Length: 183
Image 1 (tube, rainbow, N blue to C red):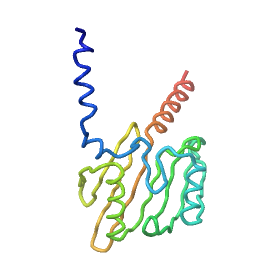
Image 2 (tube, one colour; image 1 turned 180 degrees about the horizontal axis):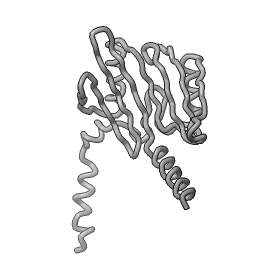
Image 3 (cartoon, rainbow, N blue to C red; image 1 turned 180 degrees about the vertical axis):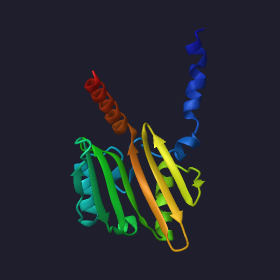
Image 4 (tube, rainbow, N blue to C red; image 1 turned 30 degrees about the vertical axis):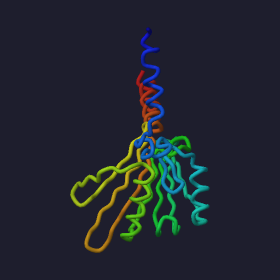
């Protein structure tokens, strides 16, 4: 009897068993996103999301050191985010490499951000470094990080979305160009 035939009944029985882990696993975790903003999004998509959230505009400028890099800023006053937050985007060839939403937050706003991320991507432990706390989720070269700091008068929090694939490709291209110039 072949190995396949010997274990086929066991494999079939295992497929019929309920899997509690599957019920706890979040959906697609590779496309890390926060309130419609996602790691690796095109600038046009980000501008539309800003417009949709509060009618604002994304202001962008090309970097002087590398014309492939665009830096964008915006201010969002969307109730969906819980209050006013600043948006900062660094994009390479119009694809976001790093996108950060940050601002002074109320306690319930920070709790809502943390709850949203844990519900979507799973529970992770918070790490502390000095006065700053951080929670991080990584999926296939992408990262989303919630960072917050509490002092006597305020809470400041940020959510950063990083696409490592965009950053890695940009770094390889810069290295290739630098090697070509040195020959």
